[in-house]
Image (cartoon, rainbow, N blue to C red; front, top):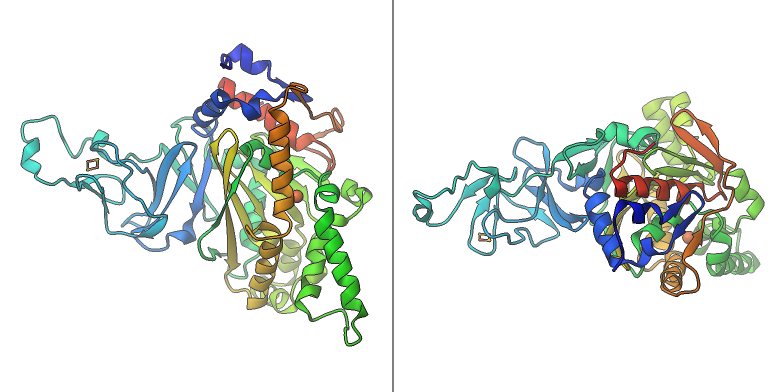
Length: 440
Ligand code: FES
Ligand SMILES: [Fe+2]
């Protein structure tokens, strides 16, 4: 059994390498759910999932089932999905609308703020200590709930930084996400995809801003895109444009840019484990109708300012990642030490033309959906790491790449995108959460 006292935890993390136990030990996973997911601001969902009173969406925060619901006063509440009577999970659906929640077991009902509404055969409680006003009988609200630009976060801990301080400089990626709408508003398009990964949750985060993997891991999809491009060009009637294949190729081909190009990109890391990678989105590929809609809404200067922001993945540790140029959000829900569920959202930009959403769909179909041809490459790599870390070949994982070459700024640290800075930043914060110290 793994020791999880403070001294033992500190021995697992060094500035430039980490012990494999943090990826394979069930006792560590249990502690992470308590000390990281029980303390951090975790993304629950987006306000547009619950536009009307009674709209709800269920998910988990760490091991805790929760329900996000729009209350009658218009506010969004996050409640533990647990009955105040004998503990049954109250809401069984993933999403829906309800005037109140009724427990499937003995029929207690709860308001959408969690308070007890009614209990059957109430007189059975006369002259007992049961009191519907007492929160012990409610569906308990999360300790803190707040939203930023429509993204709803909850913290199960009453203490800690407020959401805005927690986000720090990475809030600019959520701004970028929403500012891209001509109306300054985004909407979830349908329900999220869910993918079950056979790996520890941290491996997914450590891959998102890893610029060194794409050329190797995604070789097959880059090769497929290039051979398809060659075939397309050879068609006698082809003008290189117009076919669906021709639309897909530039998106796939980006993973094949040479190391020298990756090295020119920059990674920016923040205090609480967050980071983003400079993007390689080609501004020329915005649809003319979208640029015109943005210009009409915001004026030329502001439109240029918004569309000049170029970020690939943003990590909001420990729960989610955005790709704002493609309106993508991925939310990480750890299930076990070697099982991770990822919720994959697509958004529509309010006021944008249909072609913009078409670009979002092309991107998600190619890279993020369960049936894409890019993500399975990554899943195979994660699973192989998980398998390798179970071996006794070595206890240590190297995070040495570009160690000691970071540039410090006020509130952030930067390095070239091939640096393992984002992974070191995450393991540093991991230790702070796990030992109960504030990040420094
Ligand atoms: S457990 Fe919910 S009503 Fe009894
Ligand atoms: Fe990848």
